[in-house]
Every structure is written in structure tokens, then in C-alpha cells.
Length: 469
Ligand code: ADP
Ligand code: MG
Ligand code: ZN
Image (tube, rainbow, N blue to C red; front, side, top):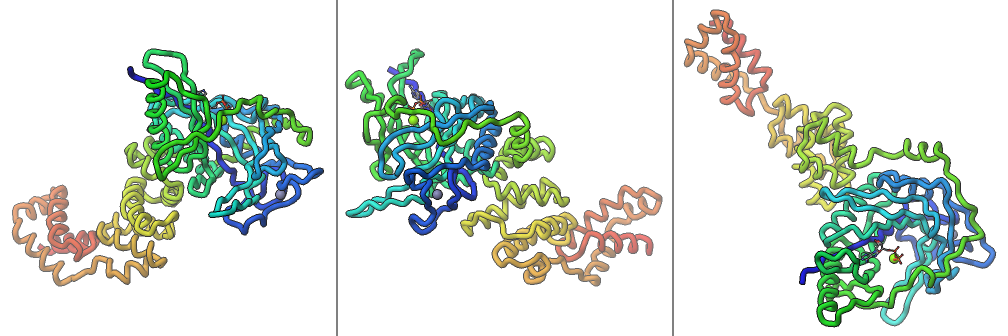
């Protein structure tokens, strides 16, 4: 029998606020353990949370980028459970009235619906070393959004594409840094399979905390096979929470899955309901940076770049920002796209860099030099990589590599004389007032003098030569 996979994702993204969501502690990664903590985020009795406005704005920004409806009234709930990384034994979250509802993203022509995006607090981190477990509460109280899809995804590849597109929105929106290796973006995948032709979803397993694109793909693919095997052998799949182990490339059962009522959700009495007016929401919309999709349309429609080229530039926000800055000060979009996707991307990869350490204005000037043939296309590449790796300006890069096409006037004169002597018919046509033939002669000279004379010089010297005949 053939089976159809049914997948829904819960994407957790840490917000890029300066401080935590309910207290003034710093929201930074990599600080000394337990250095960013206070009575509120440690859950001391009597400490009172105060909601971080920026965290609300960023959650709404995420919703706006995904076409969600933004709620005017938001409520806060306590999700109760005990675990050492959660000192209060409850997490402040939003069950009944989340900030964002509905919306979705189109992935290769299929619309994947979102159920909701809500704001909550992250838990601390448990670090298991050989014989001990260490608790680090720096992450406790970091603002976290949970983006929940409907079970609309039908393959591991589609799940990966969805997370990539979502990550891009969050990174371009200054919402989340998207660093999966640091845990800023983590994915829970809910997976079930159903017989082809059925419209009843099967029992799902939830794989928790997957932290790389590669693992999302492998974990889902493994889980689909495992469930099909279970159905064929035992006729059933158990509803449970599983974890993916990269070393063995398998998923393992962690616990049977809890339902919402197991958490005894109830309204948090410490935080008032939040009202957002239309003006509040419009204000947040106005502050959003240009989203990747509108950049894509600008690249393909206004600049005439191919879909593939536009996607390459957009694949890293620093490339897209660099490209935009250059075009803004007058760089030709096509030439800038070629250079960014070509030589600069090559340098970025070689250096393993996440920035382009070249001044946008020098980059733009270098393109102009190449457009005027004052340096060759090879010379342009040399100039760009030299500036990239040596952190110098264009003038230094051009001088150090002797890139300016050098002019040898004796040679120019000799070549022009030779070419004019070889084409007496054309010269007489020119003399008879047919100025169109000039470009033929110019082309001949350019070919012979490539790299040894500037086009402007050839132009002037050729006119002089013709006048002298
Ligand atoms: P919970 O909060 O208990 O994990 P939800 O109903 O909020 O449960 O759903 C969580 C995720 O599971 C959502 O992304 C949803 O799309 C997905 N999901 C629900 N039912 C199924 C199913 N039968 N197969 C696959 N995914 C599912
Ligand atoms: Mg869940
Ligand atoms: Zn704190």
C-alpha cells in the first residue's frame, strides 16, 4: 500500500530583543553561565513579570510577514509542568488568545497554512556532562515565538523548504538571528502517515528540537519509514514524543505525548491582557524592513535579474543588503549581481565569512572602471578579492595589482596607422561622410589594443589619424 506523509511544524524562534521578555536581564548568547539572571527569570516567589514591548512588536512583525491576522486582544496563560530548567514550574505562554492567527507561506506553488504565532518565554538550558548535569538559566525568560503550521506539509523536502523560507523572513525582519547551531531556531516536527486515498489523518509522533536543516530532512524521512513499518507490522502507530539522534540517524521514543489538559493551562494573574489598536499595528508595519519577497520582486521585475540569480543574492541577507546599497548609489544592477554572486560570493565562501568587508562605494567604482574598460573583467575580480582579503581601498588594490590598462602611445599610433592603411575603401567611405564605418575601425583597433589602451584614447587617436589622411 502507498502512504501519504502528513507533517505539521512547530518552529521556535528566539527574538532579537536587548532584554528578556518579562525582566530587564540581557538577552545574549554565550555569556558566562547564570550571569544574566534575576529573581523574575529565576522564578523567585513574589517576583513580578513586566512584559517587554519590543518582544510583542517583533512577534507581530513575524505575523505581518506571514500574512497572519493580528489580534487586538491578547491573553497570557500559565503552562504548568515540572522540569529543572523551569524554576517556576510554569511557562508564561499564550494558549487561548495568541498574538497572531492564520496566515501562511507559499512553497513551490503550495500554500502551507499557519495556525498561529504566539509569544512565550524560553526555559533554561540543561547541559549534560559526563557525570553531572549543569543548569544554565541565562536562556530562561528569553522571548520565544512559536510558529505553528497546519498539517499541510507532505514531504521532508517541503518541510525543509518551509523552514528555510520562514527563517529568511525572520532574519530579514530583524526578528530572530536564525542561528540554528546556537539554538535560536529549533523545530518540532509532527508526523503521521495515511493510506493513499484516505482523508483521515493517522496518529502522529512529535520529534522535538531538531536543530539543523539536514537533521529535519533525515529525521522526517526516518520517521515516515518507521511509521509505515509500524502500520504494516502492528497495524498502529503510538502517539508519542520522540527525539532524533544524529549519530545513529534514528528517532527514539521519549515519552507518551501529553495533551493540552495535562498542562493545566490557566490565565496568568500577573500579566494584564494586552490591547493592540489598529494604529499600534500599522506603526509596527511601517517599521518593518523590506521583506525578502518584495526584494525578490524588485530584483526580477525592476532589475531584470533571473529568478535563480535573485534567489542566490537573497540567500544571505548581508549579500542582499550589500547589493541593494550598491544599486542605491548607482551601480548597474546586472553588473553588481554578477560581481556579488561571482567573485564576492567566492571570497565569502573561501573566508567562511558572514559579511562582505569591501566598501560599497569602492565596489561600485570598481564596476564603473570595468564598464569603461579601464580595467579588464579579470582585473575587476582581482580588485574585488584583493579588497576583500586585504581590507584596502580600490585605489590601493588597483595599484598593487597594476590593473589600470596602461597606455603605449607609440604602439597605439602604429596600430591605427596599420589598420587605416589596410582598409582604404572604408577610410574613403568615412571621408565621404559615412560616419557609420567609424565603429568598424574602432572595433578593429580595440581588438588589437586590448589591455594596452583605453577606449577613450583609441577614439581620440583614431579621429586624429583619420583627419590626417
Ligand atoms: P500540541 O500543541 O499538542 O502539540 P497541536 O494540535 O497544537 O498539538 O498541533 C501541533 C502540531 O501538530 C501542528 O503543527 C499540527 O499541524 C500538527 N498535527 C496535528 N495533527 C497532526 C497529524 N495527524 N499528523 C501530523 N501532524 C499533525
Ligand atoms: Mg507540540
Ligand atoms: Zn531576569
